[in-house]
Image 1 (tube, rainbow, N blue to C red):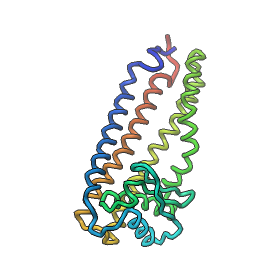
Image 2 (cartoon, rainbow, N blue to C red):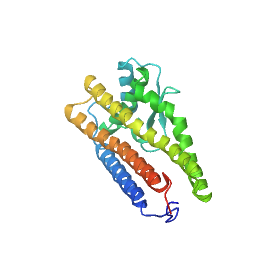
Image 3 (tube, rainbow, N blue to C red):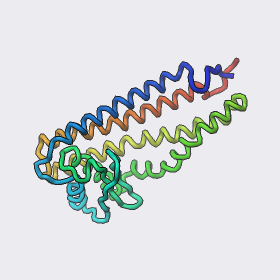
Image 4 (tube, rainbow, N blue to C red):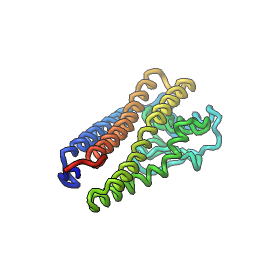
Amino acid sequence: MFPMYGVFWDPTYILIIIGIIITLIASGKMNSTFSRYSKVHSHTGLTGAQAATKILNQAGIFDVVVERVSGNLTDHYDPRSKVLRLSDATYNATSVAAIGVAAHECGHAMQDKESYAPLKIRGSLVPAASIGSNLSWVFIILGIVLGANQTLLNIGILLFSLAVLFQLVTLPVEFNASSRALKALRGSAMMYEDELEDTRKVLSAAALTYVASAAAAVLSLLRLVLLFGGSRDD
């Protein structure tokens, strides 16, 4: 039997704390960077929505609709409905930050058009990751309640690992989308070099949030493995 320090606190909880700190730092960096470059207007005067439409058309993508979505930095591309949604801070804004974020989402549309493998893999993992993150704790708690039932604990850990896998697969998808965005902006002559450098900083800060989320997920999985990953003697 493994030692029980409590379901909500034990020495390995430091891993969760580290994950939270990393995530908060990355989120703070993203918010401050976006806020800073939201004040730097692009010389073209294009809004995020206009820039997105231009980039999509130049990439030969004419079946994707650009829409506005409420919220702050809730921008995303939906490959199922072929809709690129830009947040309030991006859609009508003319800053280099807004155009950079819009271009990044266009990068996902380009990936979809080319059947970019990591994007397809991530899409296929969505149902499993959702189920895994929701059910993992059910099995883990049941395993604890039923006298450290190792089978239930292992199922819980396996389910949680699906959510972690989704986070890891997300990394190359996001990095590639940012790379495509910068290439598209440079190729279209939509930005001067100094504007491109500012945009790169925004996208790099955004990438850090995905790295932080993946790191936090891995640390949480490590904690579960350390606590419940195998039978232990009394």
